[in-house]
Each structure stands twice: as C-alpha cells, then as structure tokens.
Image (tube, rainbow, N blue to C red; front, side):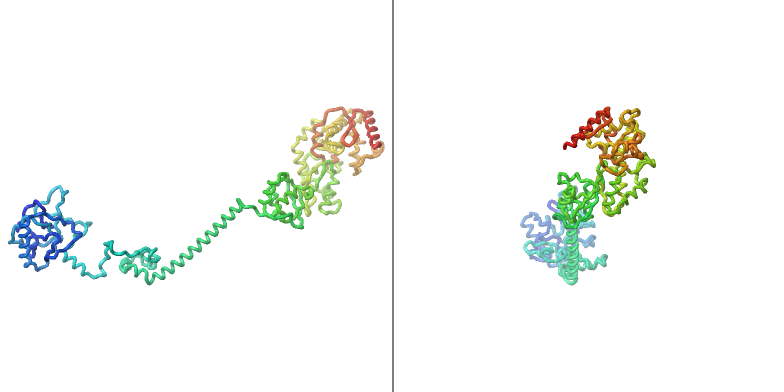
Length: 576
C-alpha cells in the first residue's frame, strides 16, 4: 500500500512524493474526526488511529488556509487509496511544505513499535494483501455505496446494542418446537440444495415457524405420543418383571387355607424323594397350591424332615402346613406295611386286598414271574423250595397305590431286600459259620425271627440253631426240631402242634422234626435284627430255650434242664 503520511520525527513532505494525484487533498490529510469533504465533524468510534499528534497553532492555521484554497479544486471522486495496485498519478507540481502533519491521515498505517526496521522511503507494507486478512476499513464514499445495495443481499448485523431490548429466540420462551436457526427436517429430501437452505435462513425465524411448521409440530406430536406409549409400555413390563421377581424372592409363596376339601386323593411318595420332589407330587395332585409353600412349611416343622416314602391319603386344596402335619400322622399313611417275620402268603393276601384283586391273584403272579422280579444269583432254585420269593419280600412300608400291578409291588420289595443284603458280606459270613451259601444264612435268620419271641433274645436263639446243626450233636442228633417249621408247612401259627411222634411222621423237606439240618428255604421274611443275630450269634453251650413270661426266655444246655424249665413255664401259665 502506498504510504500517505509519516509519523512524528519523519522527514518533511515534498511535492515530489506521490500522494493522491491531481484530484488530491492538497497534500494534507484532515485531522481525526474532521470530514474530508467539509467542516462538519464526523465520529468513527472504531477508528484505531485516533491519536492526536501535537503541533503548534501557527502550523494549524497555515494548514487550514491551505485547505480552504484547495477545497475549491475538490470536485472529482477521490481515488481509492486502498486498491491493490493504484494507478500512477501525476505528481503534484505546486504546493507547500507542510512539515509535520497535525494528525494521522485517514487510512494511514500506524507506526509499528515492534518492527525491527522502518520501511524505506517510498516502500509500504500491504497489511491487507493476504487471503486471511480482514478487509480494510472503507472511506465514507464507499460506505454510502454499500448502504445503497439491495436490502435482501445484506446480512443481518451482528452488533449488539445493550440499550435495545433483545428478542427471545429460545424455544422455551417462544413456544417453538424447534430452535431458531435450525433447519426443519421436512425438506430433507434435498439435503444438497445449499441455495435453498441459505434462502430459508435469510427469511428469518418468522418464516420458519409458518407454513410447514404446523405440519412439523403435528408430526412431532405424533412422535412424542408414540415414544410416550413405548416408554409407558416398557416401564409397565419392567415393573411387572420386577414385581414377579420380588414376589419370587421375597414374597410369600402361593398357598391354600385350611384343612382342605372333603375330596380325598391317594398320593404315592417314592423312596428317596426329598422336599421339592414331595412338594411337586403334592402340587400336581392338587393337595397344595405351590411347591415353595410346602417346602417352607416342611422346614418350619420340627419333624418335617422325617417324612418317608409311602402312600398317603390326603385332602385336596390343603394349606401347606396342614399337609405336612397330616403326612406326619400315621392315620394318613396309606402304606402297605410288611412286618418282620411275615410269610409270603400273608404278603400276597395284603396286596390283593390293597389292589382290590381276587384272592390268590398275587400268589399266582409270584409263582409264575418269580425269576423276572430281580432275585440274586445265589437264590436257590431247588425244586423243594416252596416259594423262591420267601425271605426276599423285605419287611418295610411300601407305597402300593390303587390301580398299580401286583408285580410292581413285589419287585419293589425284592429290590429293597437286595439293597439291604448287599450292605452285608453274606458269603464270607456264611462260610465262617459253616454254612454253604448266603441262602442258608437267610434261612437261619428267618428261623431266628420266628423262634425268638423278643429281640434281646435273638443272639442266643441264633446260637441254639448253630449248636444243633453241629455234626455229632447228641442232644438233637443234628435236627432242629422247631415248631415254626411245622406251622409253615401247615400254613398256621400255633403252639400246639401235636405230639412229637406224630410230627416225625410228617414227610416234608421243611419238617425239622424229621430231616437233619436246615429246611429247604426260609420260612419268613427276616428283619435287620434277626439277620444281624444270625451273623453274630452269642457264644454259649445252649441247645434248648423256653419262654417263661412275656419278656423272659430261659436257655438250657441239656434236655433235663430244658424239661424242668418247661414244667415251670406250664405251671406258671396254668396258675394265672
């Protein structure tokens, strides 16, 4: 840019220096705030060059006179001093030596106090020549021209006047559903149309809120409604899941109230069933309302853990606590109970009665299907054995529900016997005691179970059996001579079996008055106590025993002693 003036301390201006051409300003700039076109003062609040330079009054008067003379010559438009390359102008031939300027000429560059070197005379720094520079301030003539441009091409002023009330544009205050200055989404079908966007921005906020704004608002309302419904539905689902989880984890389980209805149902609880297994069976039968309620009631009852397998006769729709209490009562247990020492013939009759079958139905099935019911390999298949299942229908309580088959009950009993026998080393014990097989050991146990009246006598009764089986036994000559075997043959249970001579005439492999040794097979189903005594007899020389009263049995080594004990027993019995 051409240098138009100099700062304080510079050389005086000469007419040869290029200034503004013949149209010029008389080689002199107006003082700050003084119009170049007249005496009227004009203020430019943003002028950064408003720094007065001191000079004397004579110089100021001289400059004013020169300005009045030159004012007559001013008529042509002023050449733009800010062009990139101003046209060369004829130098001013006349004039005067102005000396130091009274003020910084308009548009003149202020002296850079940080510059390392002052530009040489006639040279200038173009401060507005770079692409990133702000445009230079324009002279008044150019400013008036800008004001005359079409209004639609002007951009809104960004100046802020603190005294002028500002218009609220935030949607919270205007009620608009869209912030001012944001493009509506209705016309997104042409996103690349920059001109249409700029024209929409030029129309202002009032245009944006008109016309399609109503449609946008309506569309936003529908969207809000849909979102609200989704949120409400989601919250409802989450609430339901949370409530269900809370009920399951912390709420009381569902339960009936009271003792139940008059309708009864038979429920079979299998062996090995635990709390939730029992609860699920009862729930499916309609006895309790929920499994959790039953388990909670069972845990709260001090005897709840003692519930066993079996068949129970219960009411429908009972409270869980009532169901537990009734199952602990023996009155509700509808089990088929097999007492210790029961013969198979009695067991068959009980099964027929429970299943409401014709008499003899179960006995017939036991005879024809014995080999398919799970007997162990050491079971004797001797044809002299009256019933191969004798001794294997283990005495216990069994669930035999109505509608089931006889073979199911028999198989369950045999399975239980195998389970109990497998806990013991029957083969080794039998050999130790001089027996041939576990089959004979079970036979001994069946004799102890029937002959021994009291359990505390079982060990001595077992010793009597083994003493009589010894070879060379001179007391009984190897015969057992038990009344129980005769009763088994005759299917009876009595103490008056007849005279010994008559008993010896009975020809039967189970008649111990005639045969030497053990009978062909067990004569009852022994329990655990009898089996234990058969395996662990008490040492002693006894060959005889007789019961004196309800809880006392007398054992003797010789027949003479035994007969004495017998007479005392008979006399005491007759004296009662």
